[in-house]
Amino acid sequence: MFAKAARNIFQVRNSPPKRPNMSEDATGLCEPLHSPDDANVDIVFVHGLGGHRVESWTYKPTEEVPVESFWPKDFLKSACPTARILSFGYDSHFTHFYPLFGPKNIPVGTTIDDHSGSLFLDLNNLRASTETPPERPLIFVAHSLGGLVVANALSRLTETNTEDKNLANTTFGVIFLGTPFEGASLARWGTIALNLVKLFSSTNKESVKDLQEQSQRLAAINDAFYKYIKVRDRSQKTLRLACFYEEWPTYVGRNNIGVVVPKASATLSGINPVPISASHSGMCKFADESRNGYKAVSGTLSRWIKELDRQGPSNHATGGVVHSGDMKFQSTVHNSGIITRDIDGNTPDAVRLTGTVNYYGSDYKPQS
Image (cartoon, rainbow, N blue to C red):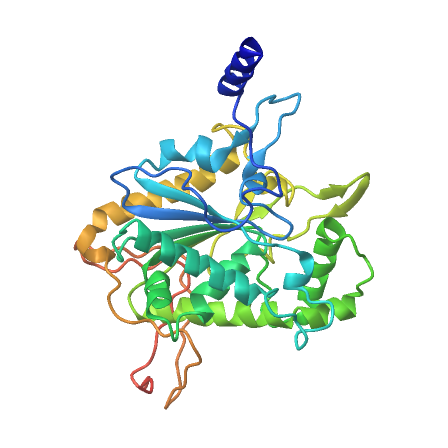
């Protein structure tokens, strides 16, 4: 009896650690993937439709690379040693994004607003429990519709809650991996939704017309996020943005359903998109650090963190309040176009502008 118990203990202690199952450790932030004592920035991963906080970012063994890799935990700490790395999970069922009965009849507790609210609530709770400085910058890495969960949190949930507003104001950048940005065109939103139905939903009864109607909430989030980006530009707290798109089509069984989110859809105005040689689901899974996709994503994160280091702690503070709700103007707003190159000042406290920049005439007077 004693010998058998000893063998069992030995086997448990020497067994390789298991990755969480899809049903385990699925929601919330859970334990940080990396948490150095000198952390000065938080990187938060947010998975997409049908995803999981671990599995979505995990490369499964193949004949080519017979090793499993959960790259946000296994690799990223080398590229971003001073970052606390977190992965957020939520119930990403298809109907939470595309309600079956239309946008007016979404059951309570199953909407994208709830996921965005949970993301910020968990971040606030973690920061409070770990006594994280409120000015610590945030960077999000989001896949597919997880990007809209982040965009919604930043642009819609910051008007009444001071803690949420601080999270939005301290967000330094967002990396979007295959996130659709289709503006107000419900026709294009419906096409994206149909691709996602084929990939993630077990029910294929939805018509394109129905999916267009069900996409209204996502179109509204898209519009609000563009307004938020412009408000950040005007507040001298420009949001750094990077967009990546899939190059390979997706197969469901033997059926080629094509590119789920094409380049044009995965690109924000004024941002130069970067390709990843993978399908929609595979574009957020990297086998090792030599993959071009990993180099591009980790390189962007590393560059942003170095930029924060150059600015110094004094410029990490939240600064002025950013209002992201509807805006009214007393006179005409003049917009002379879009700048896609970076602008750097010559002084340490200069403002760096990246992506969409708007110039306003002398008659621009926002109401208080």
